[in-house]
Length: 598
Image 1 (tube, one colour):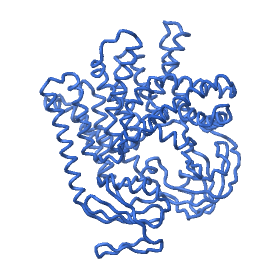
Image 2 (cartoon, rainbow, N blue to C red):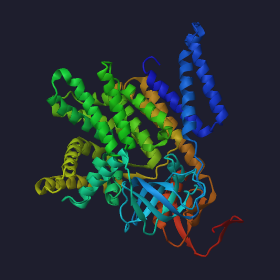
Image 3 (cartoon, rainbow, N blue to C red):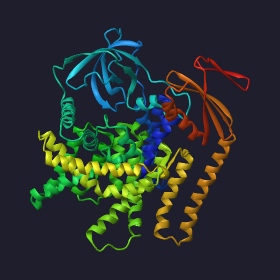
Image 4 (cartoon, one colour):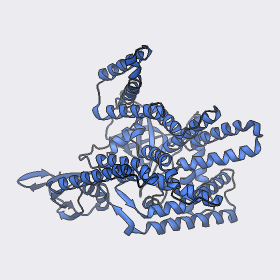
């Protein structure tokens, strides 16, 4: 507690959030819990040896209770309006989402339903799909249209992605489809936030009209303005399979590079005796950038960490990465405890922890650098390895795949990331200032990025190095993370028997647990009825083989991606086949029991 008080209190706070998430205490129990924990703090004032010994535990208990209370408040679902299947709605744009083959998708705020008697439960956030033939939505108008609206479907099986819960964590409770034309009316007054969002949309439109090739335009919008809504599926797939998707999101590396560039520029302009102003101006500038690109979660995390770190520098306190990490995480979770369950949040903080824990030991494995370039390469390599090792178990747990090529791709591309981000930022600034057509400059940038994308695509084509459908449950994940904790001591002193025993025990425990779950699932026979939108189909598992019975082949690829693969991974099965049954089949009989397919 004395060495890392903020980190330990953060862990207590997180445990409180998890406790409330999975046990769901009643309101009376939550309030009682908080009162008891607050009362226990008064014991810190008692100068008694016993209370002095337990004061740290009481403080941890208090933060645990605060975590319970905060998540209780953030988990309250509002009373939703009773909407019919088809309603006339009045709405305004909240943010863009990724498009699909036929539709553009947005998060909109339904601010009125003319036919709704009670107006108490309006406004409400909704995911809205609009055909691409319709005009683009903007922040300067209100819209009115007839839409098909419904709540997201409940999942029937625990191995499926719970889209309804995912949306609810963002306070979104409806989905809607708007097939027809819509009416629009210009807003009489546009809020400051909407003006900034609209300016971002305008710049995105200007990028579309620049002389850059379409593929590079979409890359530029993603890497600087956090807009991947129109990016082609092949590019996204290439970045996903090579483990470089963090380059397409505005992540910590982007914000650190932008901060260092602005700090370097201000240091050249501002006299030495006023260098603190350089830090303050740089921090303000990255926050302005965060606001401009619409408060993305990864951007907010990065800005908070950088701000917390440099506040310590400004206050002439010893700067500590873990203090900055803990303080930024605590602030985020206090305002929105649902962020804890965001995959990006978890990967970001685990990556930073991994860099802090493993970078120095890994660097010591290299020879002593003779040149600055060599030192830079070693530092980047060590940080890349540290981040990848730390996040690997979590990435496998959520995405169930791993590519050995991602290690090489990251080592090659990450050192170039500074050049890519800086050049992309300069191009966006030029386009925003009205210089959307500078043929020679844009031709160089276009060729450079196209070459980088070709390299990434080449790495992505190495399918033989990609392992998919890797099963990993929460217990196996926990053991692997513990093994990574002990890995540091192995790297530092591989000949120490104690280090070998601790790390070896973790590996033995992992394989023991993995084999146990494999055997359990192998011996499990079952029949399940799966739902995918309005379609129902059956799976029959007999030990190590599964047969799926589908009606025709409509939506087969989507069914394979969203139902079949998750099921196979959860049951740890590789051997499966797909059979077909007539479209008019209403029931399925298995082992003497009928299952309805209507």
